[in-house]
Image 1 (spheres, rainbow, N blue to C red):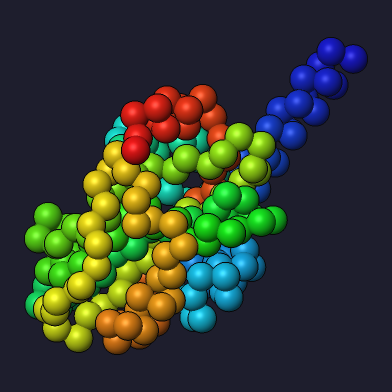
Image 2 (cartoon, rainbow, N blue to C red; image 1 turned 90 degrees about the vertical axis):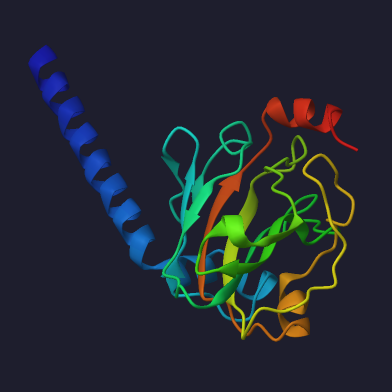
Amino acid sequence: MFYFNLTRMLAIRILISILFYTVVTASDSDVKEIMEADGIVPDTVDQAPSAKIDVIYPGDLSVEVGGELTPTQVKDEPNLKWDADPGKYYVLSMVDPDAPSRENPTNREMKHWLVVNIKGGDLSTGEVIAEYRGSGPPKDSGLHRYIFLVFEQKAKQIFDEPKSPSTSSDNRRNFSIRTFAKKYNLGDPLAGNFFHAQWDPYVDERNKNSS
């Protein structure tokens, strides 16, 4: 009986591993399909991107498309990589359309990161409009979607937008990346990624140090 149970447990673990591998592999190639399935179209954009942004947080923690991370894991600015032309300029945004909750998104969207005039995919060359501010979903508000989008600019240009430091929520609520893209003639997003997160104790710590 013990041998039978052990064999069954091993079989179940192998099956779970296979299923997990399949989900992760699909996530890398089906960005558009996964974003559409999770309502990012039409909640945030009219057209989902087909290319993936590689998002890697400290500790070599990669964002799998549509996966779940904790606010603690994403508190620091990640490294990003996408298929960029070295001679072109790009806009990067990170937004939460589920603020304060997906059921009642009265603050849609919360702007978590906005960088413009990025030369050839090198974030260090860009102009930061909103400094990176990690996820901070309220307690008992459920899962939030945190969406990274990259747009290609026609050329280097002036963006007349208020600035937001990382410690402040000013000028972040009720942002619309759709409206922003139309205002600056950016077209549809070129690449994207997203993860889900819900409250953990770090959120309260973050909010104590914020204005």
